[in-house]
Every structure is written in structure tokens, then in C-alpha cells.
Image (cartoon, rainbow over all chains, first blue to last red; front, side):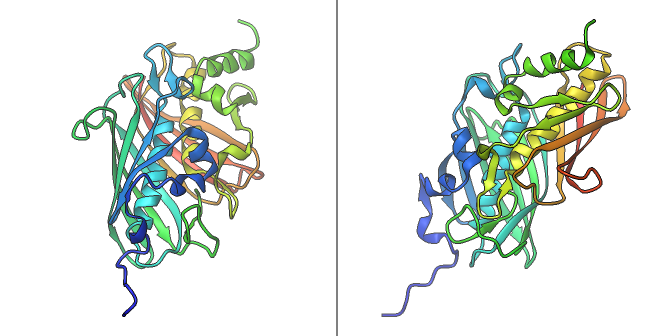
Length: 163
Length: 134
């Protein structure tokens, strides 16, 4: 019987609730980030609401930078989910547009998609929402360098430089 | 008025997320710095090891907001329109410093540049640019 071939290195893990993807990253684990689902070239993650994440106490709104962390993490995973073979991944840059304030008290979701990658660079877009995926409160574009170094990764078998 | 540095620290402590990270104010007005003290919980990649890029970005954004509050023109918190981060070097497991500069203060929009470094200000680990309604 021929050995089974996967198009994506992480294909055996595609599906819902892959906790190993977060447990390898102390900061993601510390914030309580959870993987909702991963699949070909995308990752969906969730951050349960905590009062410690608030940036504007008068409005109860989560600090924008917390959303950056969730987006950066989901985007790195989306890149890993687009590769036939895992290599080290490092964030080159990331820009977040804050479309509106997130509704206070709600868990936050991010879906990142690696829509294109070349030999050296991966391009990602991501959106964040708390109630309806088609009513995002933030949108993001990011680029990642592939094969950034020889170090390993928080993702099983791969590498991501900045975390 | 009291000590302006402790005023900045209490403004910072009014932001729950800043308290959560343990961010503190250093330097004096005009040369204000924020410090993100290293803790193992900040690690993003345990193998290198390196601080998580996301928390570094959040720290840059916090520094930009504090810079606008430090300018003291308005009291309320500025609202971010967008924030852009360039990652320049691996952030190692040690304290990180950041300094912001108001690039342009318009009628409604402030454009702020931020740089973060660890041991040498000439070797930044990340830089950021934010636009805020203020």
C-alpha cells in the first residue's frame, strides 16, 4: 500500500479544537487563546473575554493590542496550515484597522487566511468579530518570512520566530 | 500637579491591560519611555526563545497612547484607527523599552511613531505607526 500523501504538512490535524497549537506557546496559553478550527490555509481562534484585557475602562472595550496578539497568532498558524512542509515562520509586518469598538464582555474571534505564499514570503488577511463573522470590528493584513531560521516552532514540527 | 512621572504611571495603571502586563513608566517628559518587564508568560516561541510578536505590538500601541496622554492636550483616551508594526529583530527574553513620538498632531487625527528596543536603542526589535482619533 503506497504511503498516504498530504498536500499540507498539518493536514492530519485539520479540524476543530487543536489545543496542541496553543499549548506550545506560553503567551497564547497565558491569555487563554483557543483554536476553534484549522484547515487548508486558514485558522480560526478565540480569546475568552477577561476584564484584564480592557484598554478603555470608561467604555469596557478590550485593548486593541490584545486583538493584535490574537491576530498575529492565528495568522502564523494560517501560514503553517498553507505549507506542504513546515519551516520557520517570522512575522515581517502586520497592520490592523480598527473598524469599530468591540462589544464589551464578548469573547473575541479571529479568522486568518494565508491567501498567497511564495518561496520566501506568505501573505495573510484576517478579520476579527465578537458576534457575527460578517460584521467584523477589526481587519488585518500581515506578511511573514518563510525559512526565517533553523529554530523550531510552537507548532508541532515547524518553526515561528517571533511567536 | 505632583510628579509628572507618577501621573503618567497612574494614567497607565488606569488601563487594566497595562496593569496586566506590568508596564511601567521610565524617563522624564520629552524623553518618556515605557518598560515591558520580562516574564516567562510573554514568550511566544520557547525554542528560540523569543517574546510573542503580538504582545510586542500591543506594547508599542500602549506606548503610542501614553505619548498622546503625556502631551496633555486632551484628557480622554485616544481611539485607534489603525496600527502598523514592523518586526525588525527577535525580541529576546529580557525587558523591552519603547519610546513614541507624535509625528503629526492634526485637528482630529494624531500620527504617532514608536520604536522598541532591548539592550541598545540603535538596534530596535520592532517599530510601529499608529493613527488615532484624539
